[in-house]
Length: 57
Image (cartoon, rainbow, N blue to C red; front, side, top):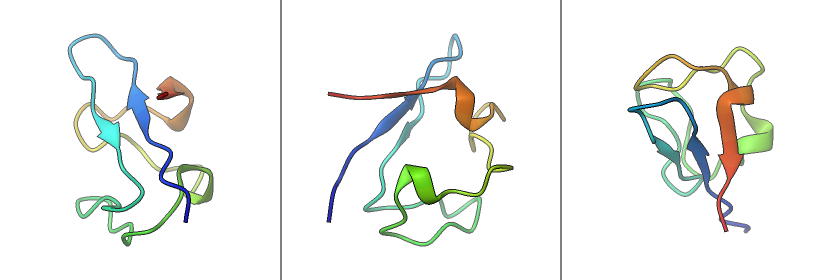
């Protein structure tokens, strides 16, 4: 399983989506890859869309 993390690029946010953890607030189960997130998924911290995220590493 790939563990590619993505970080929100909105100022003062910096939330990192970790596929091993998923997103409890957004009801996304662990081991869900970023690419598999629904198109309407939003950052649990600032509400930004997936387009505001950049791949880490």
